[in-house]
Length: 121
Image (cartoon, rainbow, N blue to C red; front, side, top):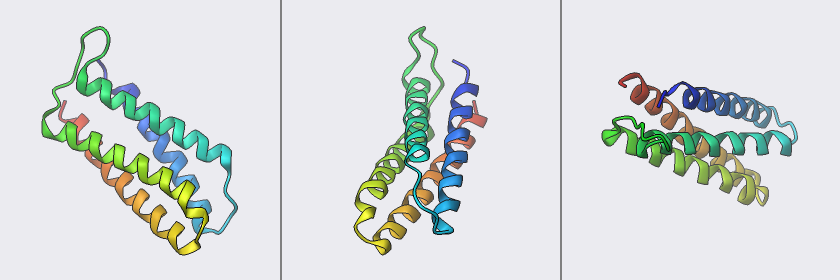
């Protein structure tokens, strides 16, 4: 299975995430449409990583090793922390800032690890 579609999905997820992050830092109101798009892209990218690790329906798979498992784990935790930021963060501005910062850090680490892993393939 070629890795290019998964890389493009992850890049689109990061791009929308950067837009959302800039809006957050500028104090602009939330855009539910952008948040939904970010979530859908992240879920599709996570599915793509799982296909790379466990094999596509046609049997193609990428040699994963421990790096692939680490990428998958980071993306899952980033996705869950993003959901927490979107739902639990509405209660307190300080909590929102901490959750968004945690989400952004995990997602950035996951994306960079993903790029290194894919580059080795």
